[in-house]
Length: 165
Image (cartoon, rainbow, N blue to C red; front, side, top):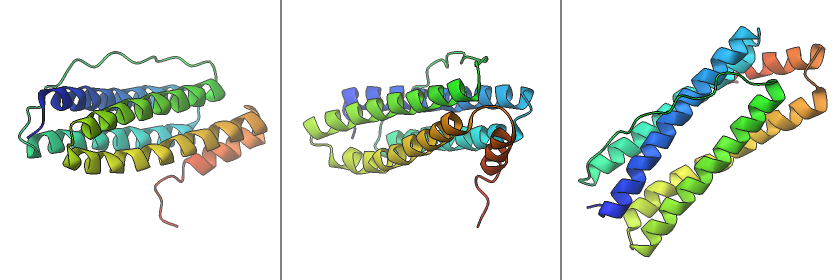
Protein backbone atom coordinates (compact mmCIF):
# COMPACT_ATOMS: atom_id res chain seq x y z
CA UNK A 1 0.00 0.00 0.00
CA UNK A 2 1.24 3.46 -0.89
CA UNK A 3 1.52 6.11 1.77
CA UNK A 4 -0.66 9.19 1.27
CA UNK A 5 2.46 11.30 0.64
CA UNK A 6 3.80 8.96 -2.06
CA UNK A 7 0.37 8.58 -3.62
CA UNK A 8 0.09 12.37 -3.82
CA UNK A 9 3.57 12.69 -5.34
CA UNK A 10 2.87 9.96 -7.90
CA UNK A 11 -0.44 11.56 -8.85
CA UNK A 12 1.35 14.86 -9.35
CA UNK A 13 3.90 13.07 -11.54
CA UNK A 14 1.13 11.48 -13.60
CA UNK A 15 -0.15 15.00 -14.24
CA UNK A 16 3.35 16.18 -15.19
CA UNK A 17 3.73 13.29 -17.64
CA UNK A 18 0.37 14.06 -19.27
CA UNK A 19 1.40 17.72 -19.47
CA UNK A 20 4.65 16.60 -21.12
CA UNK A 21 2.61 14.70 -23.69
CA UNK A 22 0.48 17.79 -24.36
CA UNK A 23 3.57 20.03 -24.53
CA UNK A 24 5.28 17.84 -27.12
CA UNK A 25 2.11 17.69 -29.20
CA UNK A 26 2.00 21.50 -29.15
CA UNK A 27 5.64 21.60 -30.19
CA UNK A 28 4.91 19.15 -33.02
CA UNK A 29 2.12 21.40 -34.26
CA UNK A 30 4.54 24.33 -34.29
CA UNK A 31 7.12 22.31 -36.23
CA UNK A 32 4.55 21.16 -38.78
CA UNK A 33 3.43 24.74 -39.34
CA UNK A 34 7.08 25.61 -40.12
CA UNK A 35 7.40 22.81 -42.68
CA UNK A 36 9.61 20.70 -40.43
CA UNK A 37 7.88 17.30 -40.68
CA UNK A 38 10.86 15.40 -39.25
CA UNK A 39 10.91 17.58 -36.14
CA UNK A 40 7.14 17.12 -35.87
CA UNK A 41 7.52 13.34 -36.19
CA UNK A 42 10.17 13.24 -33.45
CA UNK A 43 7.99 15.35 -31.15
CA UNK A 44 4.85 13.27 -31.81
CA UNK A 45 6.85 10.13 -31.04
CA UNK A 46 7.97 11.82 -27.81
CA UNK A 47 4.36 12.77 -27.06
CA UNK A 48 3.35 9.12 -27.27
CA UNK A 49 6.21 8.10 -24.98
CA UNK A 50 5.20 10.66 -22.36
CA UNK A 51 1.61 9.45 -22.47
CA UNK A 52 2.96 5.94 -21.90
CA UNK A 53 4.98 7.14 -18.92
CA UNK A 54 1.85 8.64 -17.37
CA UNK A 55 -0.04 5.38 -17.87
CA UNK A 56 2.83 3.35 -16.38
CA UNK A 57 2.51 5.43 -13.19
CA UNK A 58 -1.29 5.32 -13.35
CA UNK A 59 -1.18 1.52 -13.43
CA UNK A 60 1.41 1.39 -10.66
CA UNK A 61 -0.68 3.53 -8.30
CA UNK A 62 -3.64 1.24 -8.92
CA UNK A 63 -1.54 -1.93 -8.48
CA UNK A 64 -0.39 -0.65 -5.08
CA UNK A 65 -3.95 -0.06 -3.88
CA UNK A 66 -3.76 3.69 -4.32
CA UNK A 67 -6.21 6.07 -5.86
CA UNK A 68 -5.40 7.90 -9.08
CA UNK A 69 -6.53 11.50 -9.04
CA UNK A 70 -6.12 13.30 -12.35
CA UNK A 71 -5.58 17.04 -12.23
CA UNK A 72 -6.16 19.70 -14.85
CA UNK A 73 -3.59 19.93 -17.59
CA UNK A 74 -2.24 23.42 -18.12
CA UNK A 75 -2.22 24.84 -21.64
CA UNK A 76 1.29 24.48 -23.09
CA UNK A 77 3.06 27.20 -25.04
CA UNK A 78 2.35 27.08 -28.76
CA UNK A 79 4.86 29.49 -30.25
CA UNK A 80 8.60 29.04 -30.27
CA UNK A 81 11.22 31.39 -31.62
CA UNK A 82 13.20 28.80 -33.57
CA UNK A 83 14.06 25.09 -33.69
CA UNK A 84 16.97 25.80 -31.35
CA UNK A 85 14.82 27.52 -28.73
CA UNK A 86 12.26 24.74 -29.10
CA UNK A 87 14.89 22.11 -28.22
CA UNK A 88 16.22 24.27 -25.40
CA UNK A 89 12.66 24.06 -24.03
CA UNK A 90 12.63 20.27 -24.56
CA UNK A 91 15.90 19.86 -22.65
CA UNK A 92 14.81 22.18 -19.84
CA UNK A 93 11.51 20.34 -19.53
CA UNK A 94 13.23 16.96 -19.37
CA UNK A 95 15.52 18.28 -16.64
CA UNK A 96 12.44 19.46 -14.73
CA UNK A 97 10.89 15.98 -15.04
CA UNK A 98 14.14 14.35 -13.91
CA UNK A 99 14.25 16.54 -10.79
CA UNK A 100 10.63 15.70 -10.03
CA UNK A 101 11.21 11.94 -10.33
CA UNK A 102 14.35 12.21 -8.18
CA UNK A 103 12.31 13.91 -5.42
CA UNK A 104 9.75 11.11 -5.47
CA UNK A 105 12.57 8.57 -5.31
CA UNK A 106 14.03 10.36 -2.27
CA UNK A 107 10.61 10.20 -0.63
CA UNK A 108 10.36 6.47 -1.37
CA UNK A 109 13.81 5.91 0.17
CA UNK A 110 12.82 7.82 3.33
CA UNK A 111 9.67 5.71 3.62
CA UNK A 112 11.49 2.44 2.89
CA UNK A 113 9.06 1.83 0.01
CA UNK A 114 11.21 -0.58 -1.95
CA UNK A 115 8.62 -1.34 -4.63
CA UNK A 116 8.31 2.34 -5.53
CA UNK A 117 12.08 2.67 -5.57
CA UNK A 118 12.34 -0.21 -8.03
CA UNK A 119 9.57 1.23 -10.23
CA UNK A 120 11.25 4.64 -10.26
CA UNK A 121 14.57 3.12 -11.35
CA UNK A 122 13.02 2.60 -14.78
CA UNK A 123 12.01 6.28 -14.90
CA UNK A 124 15.44 7.42 -13.74
CA UNK A 125 17.11 5.40 -16.53
CA UNK A 126 14.57 6.73 -19.02
CA UNK A 127 15.32 10.32 -18.04
CA UNK A 128 19.03 9.82 -18.69
CA UNK A 129 18.09 8.79 -22.24
CA UNK A 130 15.57 11.64 -22.63
CA UNK A 131 18.05 14.31 -21.60
CA UNK A 132 20.84 12.85 -23.75
CA UNK A 133 18.61 12.73 -26.82
CA UNK A 134 17.37 16.31 -26.41
CA UNK A 135 20.90 17.52 -25.71
CA UNK A 136 22.27 15.80 -28.82
CA UNK A 137 19.65 17.41 -31.06
CA UNK A 138 20.19 20.80 -29.45
CA UNK A 139 23.96 20.57 -29.90
CA UNK A 140 23.50 19.56 -33.53
CA UNK A 141 21.22 22.54 -34.12
CA UNK A 142 23.72 24.91 -32.53
CA UNK A 143 26.52 23.48 -34.64
CA UNK A 144 24.63 23.23 -37.93
CA UNK A 145 22.49 26.33 -37.74
CA UNK A 146 18.84 26.78 -38.52
CA UNK A 147 18.87 27.44 -42.24
CA UNK A 148 19.88 25.59 -45.34
CA UNK A 149 20.90 22.03 -46.03
CA UNK A 150 22.00 21.21 -42.47
CA UNK A 151 18.53 21.90 -41.07
CA UNK A 152 16.95 19.86 -43.85
CA UNK A 153 19.30 16.95 -43.15
CA UNK A 154 18.53 17.06 -39.42
CA UNK A 155 14.80 17.21 -40.18
CA UNK A 156 15.12 14.07 -42.30
CA UNK A 157 17.16 12.33 -39.60
CA UNK A 158 14.53 13.12 -36.96
CA UNK A 159 11.83 11.72 -39.27
CA UNK A 160 13.44 8.28 -38.91
CA UNK A 161 12.84 8.04 -35.15
CA UNK A 162 11.17 4.79 -34.26
CA UNK A 163 12.05 3.04 -37.51
CA UNK A 164 13.86 -0.24 -37.23
CA UNK A 165 17.40 -0.25 -38.52
